Image: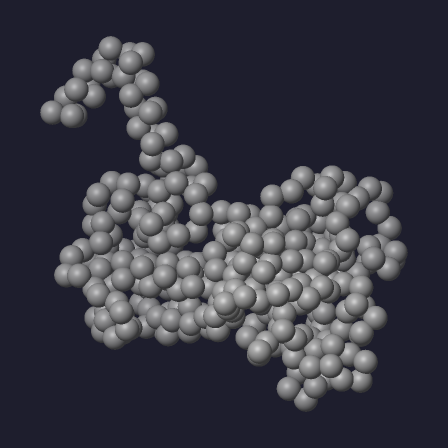
Length: 322
Ligand SMILES: [Zn+2]
């Protein structure tokens, strides 16, 4: 049975290479609240694998630091207790599911030879964009060892990671509270609306791939690939933008097309709701901008309010409603 430990602070660690030596560059593998699998105890070092590292990546911690910065958590019926996560626990199988979504996206991306802009957008699904204010590793080390003198720590770092895995713990914290965390200025998680577990990411990625297979003028090899994915059914219909109801045309995404980069975008029916297949879809870039940062409901309320204020708009509304 695997044993799990939960870090009480975020701290950069050096992943080990295949030969057992530490890599040159550190990464935020030890993250406050993120479960780590115990690998082994050898030579006064504890070897661990973090949920937010790439699969098969191990880091090590001297025993004294380990005792100070980790607590063992319990597992019952496959559920790992980790209070920083929604519901306070995650299933052990989430560790194994991390690879599946990235493999799917890598395979799908290879087939999108004539749709360059879509490759980048598909990649965006995989990670949260996060905060560009997050402390970089040189900033973190500089602050911790005192070599980086700061006028104030008001503006140092952010609780939210810059570009990270979507299964970092969701965090919503003011800077004053963040400054008091044990691992400051190391980040602690991601924005709640960017969060999803690997199983949810797989589900959303599959749904987005099905929509792509239903674009007008979609690539036939791509459709063949999608149809072979177990459990996926591609209905014979053209995918439509959920904001205007019009078809989404893959041909407009080729590099010969003027607005190719922004013709198709990942849209959210509710921009503030979480990362989920029901909330996300491929729509027109123009429609995405028209919707702005608002929900569909807010847009409808605007239209009705305008009609209530201005009689000429009320007649227009009545005419549109037929
Ligand atoms: Zn549209």
